[in-house]
Length: 204
Image (cartoon, rainbow, N blue to C red; front, side, top):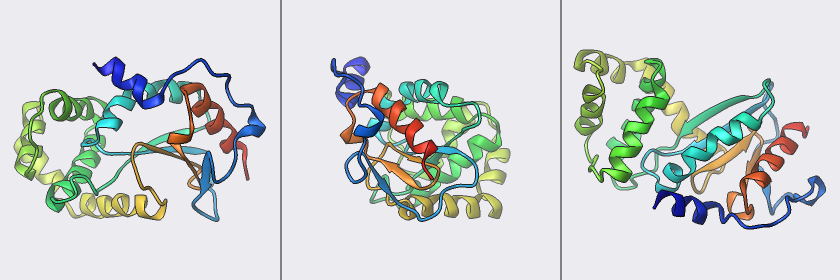
């Protein structure tokens, strides 16, 4: 099932990879900032509640491995899913930051992805977010302390504002050097995504 979903997501077909000069602004990518980042960075905007993000997750490693070693890869969690539950949509951003602070971002992200998209576990309250951490070996006291800290709240607010600033309308979406937003639906396969990402990393 997951394999089929991946095929649908990227519509892998036997097409030649677009040449460097075939990628067009306004078609394959958009400019979302006047200034590029000081150092090379590729950012994936995503949500743990997003089914397409869950399907795309295995492909991220392929993209990251194809990037030059000098390029930093980051993930930025949006706060608009679920749309009708702000405590949880913002709470999951705080939780994602806590995962990183614990040094367990990949592991705990996988647990949330699995619970939400395979286990079909409802996560409708912040208590249910907390419970997954506890079941994963994080003490209740440590989670509560980190999750409610003003520093984490401020960092989450900054992250939650970033998708608006980068004009993200759907996830997953890749942004290169804080300036170039890739139009994922305009690409046919992973080879094109890698080629376009590398091209945009070289643009001024």
